[in-house]
Length: 552
DNA sequence: AATTAAGGCGCG
DNA sequence: AAAGCGCGCCTTAATT
Image (cartoon, rainbow, N blue to C red):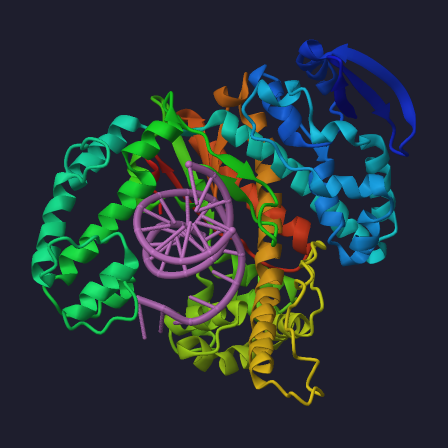
């Protein structure tokens, strides 16, 4: 257990499995990396308040740790866990509640450990660790799942910092050439590149609007209507259905303007340094347990710029993504053997067709997505009865999650992550039907609120459990990759990108096959961790490439 | 001048 | 094509 530094010294408390103190050491914070490296040989589990406050500096000193408990992330899970009475857990005493407010820090090395005042300084990690262990001990049937979840979440915290440390290999010269080829040379600040000017001139001429600002949606809608085009918005997919000479240049302008705003030269200057893109990943940043990211839009890297992600000389990228992860997870979650049978095929959707459940692959896909997201209209809605008939257990699971949400109840993932309580004022008016005012409008909107929340909880159980599979995959893979090489983290095969159901590993070329094997073995292991012996496959699409753009 | 909301679109 | 879920972040418009 590492405790926050006081006057430049860090206390290190040795705890045994029962939580008893075996000893205490103190070390100057500048000597901490060396001490951690020494103790790491015994493979301890490091317990600390928050990985973002400790690990960047350790990595900067070349120290990688095998496992940890991140009290901040574990606290966040437990306080929402129905199995441990989350609210009661957090409210146990004022001290416990203070952990609610602890925010991760931006993991620029150096700054973190050495800030004069840190909200974490007031917290007692030993006490919190004991509270958490006690909460799990009293979680009954849910204890095993929660323990696995907390371990996986903590391992994810290590991966997140390692991803930032290593960075995604990024060729600024390739990116620049790509931009120049698309829009022309970089103009002076504030000006439009040549290609955009040409497209805009065409659109302005066709609309007879010489001063049109195409970046203002309200103005664009006004101008289009004035030209006789009955549009409700300026969204591209709506414009695509219109036949008019202004539309093609406008659509092309929007596409390129978007690329330039999100991933143009400004982005390149701000986010790529020394041949690496280093976004900040935020484990647990999404309610469902998915990661979020901070800065640079890491989880929205457009396919358009992926050619710039290029392995270093002598290295390759191993890109792997889990095929049709959410339906497979749902099959396991619901113990739906018919669906699991389809999930044993490489292409789950085609297998649904082959078994006679639905007529076409497209319909299988939309039907399944509709079941998971709560679609009611279009092809999704039409397929639901077939899905319900062919896969009753899976269907019933998501239906129950939706109904629970509509009642304002909480749902949980396989390992026990709980959905949030609907906010104050949620579905207001629905219980006030006795009011003789009889306001219909609040009732209507309350019903809409309930349905929407039901779609959220329906999706929560699937997306959240898929996130647990992905975390388990990541945690297992991290350890296997470490064993494949020698030296520092970035000298070995190491993770450089993670995107919900997809990973990118940067590796010496000669280890590519071993990495591909490790990626697949880790996926199988994640399936066993979550679903035990239930027969379920998690096939991956794996590509060994020089550039990210060449995968998939 | 600074902050928030809205519209839009990229990713899974 | 969108449909149904979850995000981050850009620009412009509205509000404080």
